[in-house]
Image (cartoon, rainbow, N blue to C red; front, side, top):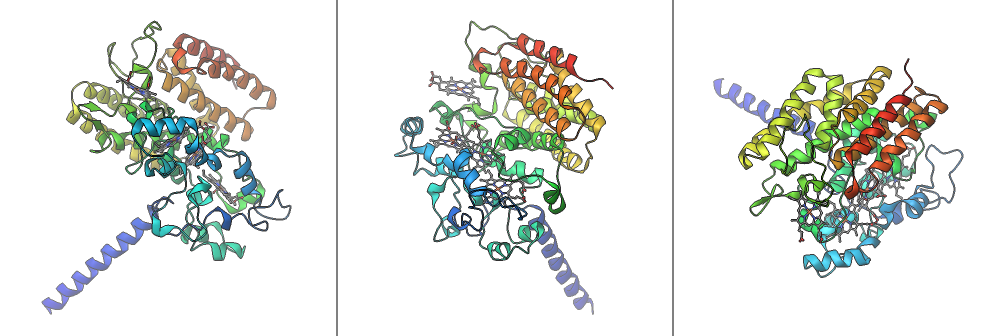
Length: 447
Ligand code: HEC
Ligand code: HEC
Ligand code: HEC
Ligand code: HEC
């Protein structure tokens, strides 16, 4: 009897583990590049009755001309070609690579590049960042999908990547636009000539030539997220990715130096004659110190301070602690980064559940502008993030009818001054940005 109960318990605990593992697999959907699902190649999506129509179809749920938009307007379609240009040849030569277009380190981000076993017969690396690089290997979902009867959720169960979900979308985009444990643009690659990278989820979603329309029919099929929420979630995931790199044994260091990509580029890269250092409340660092790139910490603190004030205060403390730790040593830095990582993980869930209403949007707009006026955006990377944040917020206000066309135009014209102030990174002057924030402040309609 005792024996059989023990056996049953053991069986239960094994079954329990199985259930847990299943649940983890469902919630941690793998990135298209990591999943074992076979990628069939762009050609399998581009048929004229599928997504390769020349003009949008009138009586279809989706546009059907996605391929044409992608191939003619979307830089992702040229991402592989770029590896043949002079810039790439120079980068490859500087890194001692035979070629950029055959190097895994480049193809990992400049193409859909799944494991060899996950490439179908018609799959071609030369397609660049193709449909399945974002939507996932199609082998399991294509059949049901072409029948036209499947829902988005059913497709996702069959391995389609949930691009609609802002958390999942942020993880996807940032896997290439920042990097992850398996692919990363290091300072060595930057030093060889790779351009600096910057990203903001809502802005980059808007800049990518849209091959989908959010209309009444889309809203019926899929959940639509407010742009401000997309921005907030994007900031949290971006900071989480930075902290993961900072605590990673492989990505955080290069010899006796830390990995410089994690720091503010312009702390080192700006002319010595452009003297501009000034103290900043949220960093509490003296002059002449290489600062971690804290632009996402500052943006996230603005969001958290409004949505969850206790977390906002905590993030302010932890930002200062992390900056201090970076002047003390690697262990102190790792400890502080881990603590911040825990807080940020909680914020992702908090923002995903929060309903971003008018009062939130207005408070966040005001929050970014006031921090700007206070002089918090001394560093170029932060001013750049603030500009993209304001663009995301203004667009959301327009799209949800919080401002009329005339009000939007006045605000957007003022935002142009912020764009001008951040147009050339090495010539950035914080005073010009503060002036732009003051001007924008005057255009906000006060209700
Ligand atoms: C972690 C992902 C990642 C890796 C690894 C990577 N890149 Fe990039 N690369 C990007 C992204 C993202 C951009 C676009 C940046 C932007 O515009 O914001 C880019 C831009 C470029 C550009 C500029 C393209 C243009 O239109 O001007 C060149 C050239 C380039 N990469 C070459 C390379 C080469 C060569 C390698 C290999 C040594 C490489 N990249 C590795 C992600 C990556
Ligand atoms: C860089 C990532 C990326 C690439 C590459 C990409 N897509 Fe998308 N796609 C998205 C995002 C993001 C959305 C919007 C969110 C959503 O509806 O899932 C989307 C939406 C769609 C939709 C849904 C439209 C709707 O109304 O529901 C279709 C269909 C689609 N893409 C097809 C394609 C095809 C075909 C290709 C290749 C020719 C392609 N996509 C390439 C990211 C991408
Ligand atoms: C597989 C890697 C990969 C993924 C995933 C990816 N991108 Fe990209 N993206 C690139 C590369 C590489 C470039 C640069 C291409 C070039 O310049 O020719 C790029 C360029 C862009 C650009 C043009 C930037 C500019 O300077 O004009 C936008 C916008 C963009 N990506 C948005 C997104 C969004 C939004 C997502 C997520 C839905 C995403 N990307 C996912 C690799 C990727
Ligand atoms: C701690 C200071 C420091 C930080 C932070 C830093 N760099 Fe550098 N960077 C250097 C040094 C030192 C060199 C080597 C200069 C040389 O060889 O003359 C260099 C070289 C470069 C080069 C090649 C310049 C050339 O003339 O060939 C590029 C491009 C570059 N860095 C980009 C970046 C980017 C982008 C970032 C931020 C993501 C960054 N760096 C962050 C110190 C830094």
